[in-house]
Image (cartoon, rainbow, N blue to C red; front, side, top):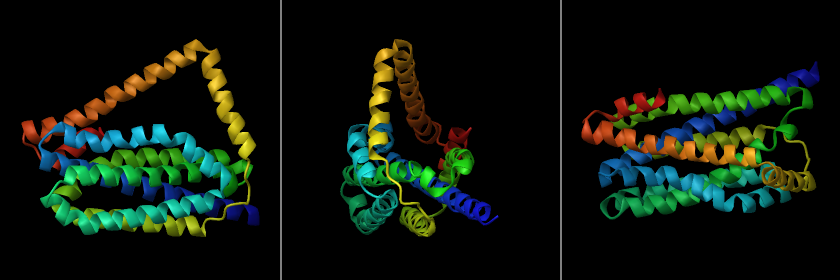
Length: 260
């Protein structure tokens, strides 16, 4: 009974962490993209913020994975979130000056650094599921995290569009700082078992490469998925530009359309 209660409490904390973190990040990313679209007046300004994350993740993924496998994952997640809060605070302080000078350049630098921090957190936290709950609850935790991220992704766009139209952008940065602080708190109080399996992680990476090399159909499907993802991203960039700048609708309408 005690073990069941412990696992259910762990599920609650981990699920809440995932939803808060994903929702806050998605709202902020979309709001920043809208701000860049408003200032630059081009789809490029909007798209830069969206493209940087995946590019940074692709380039630094091997390095991040090695660090996550080498050090305690809970510590990596907490340090990454603290670094992100510091980064957001600096961005909040320099934002008024950046608007008057070159917000696009400042945003590119900020988004690059913040994405590295976020990537460290997401990889270390999501790879720690076996350390958070017992084996019998792994599937439930994975389902909760996947559903949480999906719900956050759907809800974030209309919420961001509404919030962006109602309050100053500085307050949106502040909201994101608060969600990251809540993420740190929830991560700290979540118990992680002292467990590291660096060799297994290394072997898994090698196996994945071997599988892709030995199966051309799977490689082709992976390439098709990447191209489809690129096409979806292009639509994500194009829709707000057309809705806001061409059709002259509000950011709320743009968010509602993209959430469909």
